Image 1 (cartoon, helix red, strand yellow):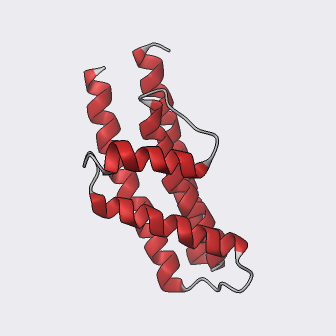
Image 2 (tube, rainbow, N blue to C red):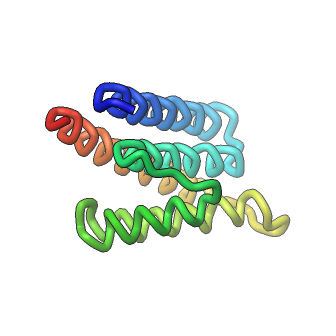
Length: 136
C-alpha cells in the first residue's frame, strides 16, 4: 500500500468509528437500550484503535490482540495517555458484560461513560492520524 492509500484507509476506519458512535448515541438517547448502546460505543472505540493500527498496516483477528497491541505500542509508550488505556479496558469489560452476562443490567451512568470514552478516544485518534498523515 502506498502512503496515500494507508492514510485513506486510516481515515475510513476513523469515519466508521464516528458513525458507530452516532448510532450508540441514538440508541442511548432515543431508544434507551443501554445494552446495545454499550455495544456500539465499544465498537466505536475498537474501530478508532484499528484506525491507528491502519497507519502501520497492522491488524489482528481477535479484539484482545488489537487492544493488547495498542496498549503495548501506544499506551505504554504514552503516545496516548495511560488514562485512556484504563478507560478502554473498562469499556471492553462493560461491553462484554452487556453482551454476555444475562444478569448484568447496564446503567444510564455506565452507558453515558462508555459513550464519553468513545468520544475522547476518537478525538485523540483523529489528532494523531492527522499529524501522521501530514508526515507521510
